[in-house]
Structures are given as C-alpha cells and as structure tokens.
Length: 311
Image (cartoon, rainbow, N blue to C red; front, top):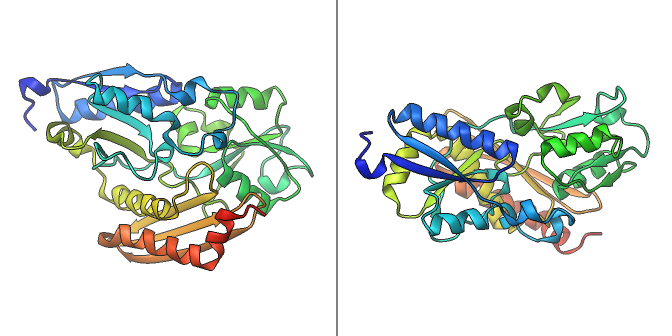
C-alpha cells in the first residue's frame, strides 16, 4: 500500500507491562515491514487493571478492565489503534470500535509452572497450592484435581513467577503465548493440551483494535491478517458472546481450521468444577454460526444452570 502524507505516522495505544510492550513492538515491526517508511510510535496508557491490584479479577465482572482507557485514548485521537491480548477483550466491542483483522495465532495452550522438581499437574502433591486468577482455569483444575488448594494471583508474568519462586505457591498456571513472547518458555514444566484444559476464547491471539469506520488505519493493518486465525477467533468470540460470559463465568473455547473447515470445542463450568463440554464442525464461512450453535447446545445441556448456580 502506498503511504500517504496523512498516514506517514501512526500511534499504537498499549499497556505498559513487559508483555504488552513486547506484543505492541511485534505489531510495530510487522507494520513497518509491510509499509516501509511508516513511522509507528507507542503510547503507554495505564488501565484500571494496572492500578487496582488488591482485588481478584472476578471482582470486576467483565473484561473491560485492561481496555477501556485505551479505547478512550483512541476516541480522543491520542492513539490510532490498540494492541491487546484478544483473550482480555470483551466478547462484544463498543459500536465505535472494530477488530477486522487478526495476525497469526501463537500457542493457544495453558501451561503449568511448578516448583521443587514437579513436572506435571497430576504429579503435584495432595493439597498443593496453585495460583490462578482465572475462573476458567480454576474450574478445570478442580475438575481434574479437586484436592488442590487454588489461590488467586495477580500481577504481570514476572510478578507471578517471582511469587512462585518465593514459595507463595507450589505451581501456577499461565498462558503459553505470554511466556514464549517473553522468552520464558524454559520455565514451563507441563504444556496443558486443549483436551485437558480448554484455553480462553482467542487465547494466543493479538487483537488489533481500530476505530470503526477508520478505513485508512484498517487498510494499514490488513496485510497482517491471517484468515485461519480470524475464523477461529470469530467462532470463539461468538461462542463467548452468546453465553455472555466474562471474568465471572468459567468458559473456554478453542477453534482449529483445516482447509475450509472449522472445528470448535467449548466448555461451560462452575466454581465447583462441574463442566459441560461439546464440539461442532462446519465451513469457515459459518464461523460465527458455529460458535453460537455450540454455545446454545451447551447452555441447553446444563450450562445455563451452571452460570446461574455455582453449586
């Protein structure tokens, strides 16, 4: 694409955590490779989730905790686009925001990072203390190992690893993509396959958010689009939107694309570790419909009761 004078410089809004900056730098590099001569600057924006660290994520009730202030900066013209971990985004964006394109997905899995030579989730000692701030992870951990003591953990990746190393936890569960992007994959003691622990919707995906109707900025990011990732993220986010689950609902989904076919697996659970799980397959062009259909199936087969009753 030919860079016009008006588009010669753009600003990416980002959180200031090490992982957020690494991810935004990745997008900056991709944009500059796609558009030589484009000047891309990062604008660090502090969100509510970066300020309030003394309460669990579940106390806030939605996924706007790391997003709202960045969207406000875009509305004010301080940023032209935003880079998020797509799993942190609400399932439905505000009407003045859009996310039309998705770069290729990184590793979608969760991972276990354990102490004292423990290598797997099933090898953790009886009653081991495991840190996670995710109801989805906690639900699946209780389903697999009801004996574990699950404890909330907040902070960026480095902070969580430090708390583990200090002995505050016997193990923690994190997203594989974040550890890999930070060059910390050697800390992983077990890679948890989706068959064992379904990831969060769009886990491992970078969400590049733009202002709705800003065709010039959208055209700049279009070369970064990876259609299989876009189809998968669309199905997973449609699944979540249908359930209307946020940080207060143990919900997970993972879609894979092979050729022109998409397969999605999903789960709804409760805090006690009870789970309903199902799968759907169909053409990639029906990604949204597949996510919605799977959500409806799970809601009808016990999921709706789980969302309204934690017992």
